[in-house]
Length: 196
Image: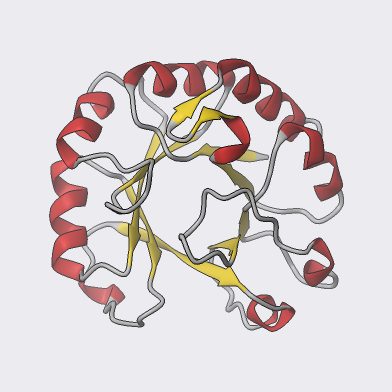
């Protein structure tokens, strides 16, 4: 099970997340989020990370030019894109990307094409609220290319057993407060994810 810890805002949390066993770190470039980080601050963290850790920039309804510029400045390896306004021409992105599906019903999941996607629960504030996607929506769905986010924490990961998700993505479930991670919660989350 691959694990992404999102909403990284400082070097200490980044290093603790990696030491806990995270494969990827997420950086939120959405100014209205309490987990927002500037490209300059993100770059300071990126430059001290060890190898083999993927960096992921989260963008919300941004234009291609802004995404390309920020991802380049902050040295993001992957962009994670919420495009509710359907304004992105994905062919113009300079980085590898993953689309976010903010699921409101089972139909949103059944319509997934054969591509890697991140599925999160729909919330007006664009994530980080601990709201979960209904697991029954994934019944009879091939989840091997789905990254599941939304309301995950160490205590409920065992419920994912048998679905075969590609990865899990956590933010609020490993926080001490919004934008600040809890080291023990990250350790417990990674341990629980590997036990699935």
